[in-house]
Structure formats: structure tokens, C-alpha cells
Amino acid sequence: MTLMITLCLLISALSFNYLFLEKQQQLLKQNLTDTTQHLSSATEQYIDDHKKVIEYAANFLSLANTTNDEWQPMLSQLHTSYPSFITMLIADSNAQVKAGSPGVMMLDEKNNIKNMSISDRDYFIQSFHNRQLYVSSVFKGRGFGSDSIIAISAPFYQNNNQAQVAGIIEGSLNLQFFANIDNQNSYGEKELLVLIDDNKKIIYASSELELNEEDEFTYSDDKGAYHIALNTINIRDLESTSPEHVFVKKRLNNGWELYVLKPLSPLLKTAEQQMLGTFLMLIISIIFTFIISRKVCQLLTAPLEIVANQFGNINNDDLKSQVLDENSSKEVFNLYQRLTNSKRELLTHQLELEETVAIRTDELEQANKKLLALVDKDPLTDLKNRRYAEDKFDGLLDFCLRGEHAITIAILDLDFFKQVNDTYGHLAGDECLRTVSSLLKQEFKRDTDIVARYGGEEFLLILPISNALKIEHHLNQFKQKLAALVITSPTDQQQFSVTTSIGAITANASFSTDIDVWIKVADDNLYAAKEQGRNKVIINVINE
Image (cartoon, rainbow, N blue to C red; front, side, top):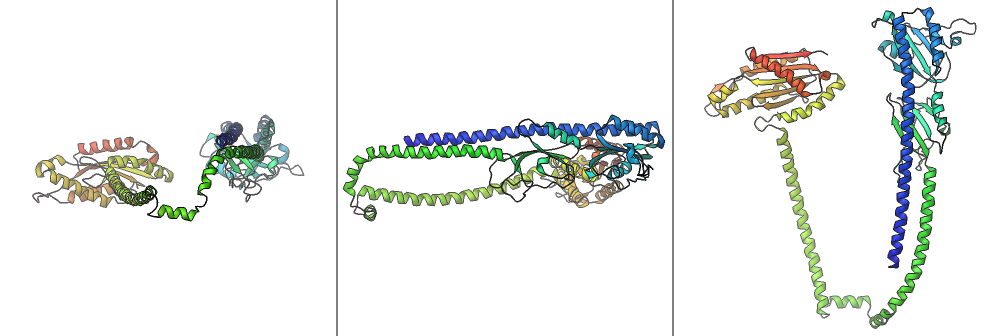
């Protein structure tokens, strides 16, 4: 009882320590998460506000149709209103800087206007040639200074004509904003910040981390032998098995990543202190329990030792021989024999059971494979069924969206199929469906093509990566081959042929994400083909 009570106390203490450390980790993670959310929101707001400034300025230049002489005073006034830009500039269509702020940076040592070109800068190339608002990765400035900057640029147009780019306007963000945010986070134990751009280069890092702007951010997230629920990171010593910090990261809307870190050592120190206290209590409890248990055992075992001494002359070998000897106690010998036989029977039964389980498992796997094949296939034609085609459509759509490919969806209906059944019988109708299915698989045999039985005498084609100029010819070619195909009735060997009406749509994958919209257009075209006398192909080619 004493040992059990002591054991319960020790388990309780260890459980308390474990739960306490888990709670600390949860609180720390929540704190880091809240800080990350707050800082990421502030960063995104900072970027978005200044993107709007550049965008509005570009729109003003496009609408106002200003001359080069008017650019400098306008830019200086704009920079005064938004001092968060270190510098601002306007360049013409030849990438020559025509206005800059502060204006003194436009002058050389002799107070002449500098001849500066930004044709090699990404912010000019992206804005001018791609005609879009652009936020650059971090880079070192030139001409207007050598600070590390983030450039925001946008194109403006001649007489607001979207076809003629007159130049670009650019503002270089002051990265000191992130240092101000970092310094404001001074209550309690300070979190450390690392902000990297979409090229994994450091935009800003807390000074305690001793990281340089524009360097590539490299780290190791190996936890080593530590069992910790938090994410850990090593920045200085990537080979170390002892993590330096815990962290939470968030990906910003523009592709940047924000890391918020805290040193791991305080948490480890707390854990060490608690575990040390627990082990001290463990040692004291074991010593105390040993002393009490020894006293209790002496009181309980003294009478038993008197009885045990009567058998003191029997060693282990003698005892073993007595148990196994047939002349020994019948009950002991029978018990030994029964235990031995039971063990042997149990092992035999276990082997038989394992063999049976293995056989049943293999049979079940084979049955599941057959069932899975039946679920996706039409048993008569061996084509995929409607359910399979609709399930696979989303995957093919995503594939074509990434490659900006067109998709063709076609519905085929055999003309006057009911007359085939009425004239030659249902077995001939089944043979007709199988023959048409075989021809479909021969004509549309790419790995990406889906040929399915849509229901009755209707078939569905889903053809990704379609050539809009050739698909109608391909469908007409299939229609002609089917019309020329001779089908033999399996019952009376009579020969007949069938034709088909086809309605289809070819469009970019962005046309619609709903397969029912595609099928509705194809079905309308199929109806039109029947109205126009059947044995026709009607296809819509949508270029959007």
C-alpha cells in the first residue's frame, strides 16, 4: 500500500509537470500567433496603403496629361505628403529619370541634372513592359542612395491611352517602419522578428539576431532530441541539435513571410527546474518508502521464514526434478502436463488462425479491386460511366487552367437507336453499343481523354488540351467512320449500320468550373443537330 501511494504521488507530480509545460507551450504559441497576426496585418496595411499612393499617382499622371516640366514639383509635393517613401522618381518611356525626390538627388556635384537610366531595374521592366503595379523584392539602391529598399512602381499612359505607356512612377519604401514596429513590442520578453521577401531575402531582422538585410535567410528547423510541441529554429548554428528559438511564421498576401521568434532557453530553464524538483522529490520518496517498506516486511515475513526454513534443504534442481518426475505429486505433474499441452495447442491454433486471416485478407483485397473497377465502369461497353467522368472533370480542369489549354466536351447520341432494338432485337442493340464503344476508344485514345457511356445510347467525351481548329474535323471523321461501319447482329447475322448526332463545346478551361454548364451547351448543340436532320456535328468554339 505504501509503495502504491508513493507511486500515485510520483505519477501525479510527473503528470502535473507535463501538463504545466504543455500549457506553457500553448500560451507561448498563442502569444506568438497573436503577435504574428498583428504584425502581419500592420505590414500588409503598410504595403497596401503605399501601393494605393503609387497607383493613384500613376492614374493622375495618365489623366492630367502633364509635361516633363510639371513632373518635378508634383513629385516633390507628393513625397512631402508621404514621407514613408525614402525616395520617389518618375521615368519616361526610355527609362530615363526625369523627376526625383528629394530633388537635390537629381543634381550632380556641379548642380547639373544627372543622366540616370533605370532600364535594368525590375521595377521599371515589370511596370513598363507588363503594364502593372509592381512591388519589388528587397535590393540595394543606387543613384538616390545605397540603402536597402523595397520599390513600388506603376505605369502611366499618354493621354490616358492604355496602348501607349508614357513612363513609370516609383517610390522606395522606408524599411525603418519595420524597426519601429519591432521597437514598439517592448513589453514583457521581446519577440524577435524576421521579414523575408518572395526570394527568401531578408527585408528586416531584429538586431539581436545579427542578420544582414538582402542576405538569403537560411535556417534549420531540426528539433534534435527535444520533444516539444512548438516549431523550433536554428539561425546561427545550423548543425546544432539544440534549438535556439521557437517561432511562428505567416505568409503575407504578397508572398512575403514573417517569422516571430522567442528564445527557447527560458522555456528549457523552467522545464529543467521543474524536473529537477520532481526528481528530488522522487529520490526522497523512494528513500522514505524503502525505510517504511523494510520495517513492514520484517513484521510480515518473520512468521513465513519459520515455515520456509522447513524446505531450506531443497534446491532449485531438486524442485525441478520433483515437478517433472512422474513419481512426484500427481496433481503437480498433471498441472504441468496440462499447461504444456495447452501451450502447444494454443500455438497450433494461432498458426492456423494467422493462415486463415492471411487467406481471407487476400480474398478481400481482390474483391475490393474488382468492386472498385465495377463502380467506375459500364459493364456492357467496358467504358467509364457518367459518375467517373464527372468526378475526373475537376482534375482535368485544374490541369488545363495551369497550362491555359482548351477543353472539348461532346455528347454523342445514336440516331434512331430504338429502331435497331425493334428491328434486330436487344442483343443486336447491345452489340451495336459495344461496337460504337470500341470505335470511340480507338479514335479518342490519349491518356487524358475520357470516353464514358452517358446513359442509354448516349456517350460523353471529355477531351482536354483540344485544338480548336482541328476538333470539329476529328468529330466529323469519327461520324463518317461510324456511318461506314457494318454491325452484325449476333442472333441472325443480319448486318446494319448506325449514324450519330454530336453536340460539342470547345472553350478555354476558364469558361466554367461547373461541368453542368459545359454539358448544357453540348446538349443544346446535340438537340440542334437532331433538329437539322441528324448525322451532324454542331460545335461551339468559345474564345474567351
